[in-house]
Length: 298
Image (cartoon, rainbow, N blue to C red; front, side, top):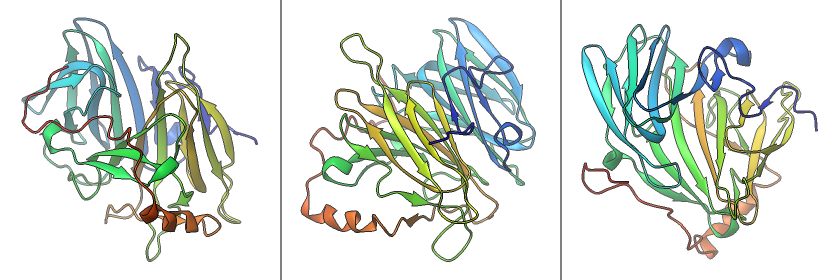
């Protein structure tokens, strides 16, 4: 399978001080962006949001986000497998400063947009944790930036955690057309794989064409820090190999002002969804739940 630039290994897309830098120009599309910023203890970083809205999401560590004369203190987390995190939304046409006393790694999920919304804080206690699928298709979704959960202009972003040995993003699905029951969304997958017994983890990601106008074809071995770009096509499964839990961050945006995540299953595999009512959700889930109060500890 030719990955054709859709699979970017960790560090391959580094630019301008970011370990990962994907924007519409580099991806060859219109809306979706992702940056991964690594800060050492006491370090800070400044950027202009330009024509895009952003969510600053701690992957590990904590930080303060300064924007529009406001400061949002993000308690963060020890790592993506440790707990739900709080986050900050910053609008287009703003100057932002991210400062971290203890250091950490931070995802900036972005989307080109038209409307300027207020800068806001998103508490970890407000993040719905959803268990999706059943059996070996069980996974956990942290809906921090889902369309039905958090207000944004175009940006949609969620986290998915998949126990070792399970298949996620299954049945394969697509969202590359604006039509009834489906929305056109460009999507970025950012992966972190839990290591085990001193060995870095691996997983696999499949994307394949959904029709004559679709050309994305990927079968990639993914490791922590890797990115897969999905402009179109059926995507799934995301495979967590035995012994290694998988995390991925999904970033999506599209042309419709409705900001909806509407998908279409591959008809060849859609029947699998009908088997879930007769199966139990994987007992290893959830990895964790959102805190009941506003206080985060890690």
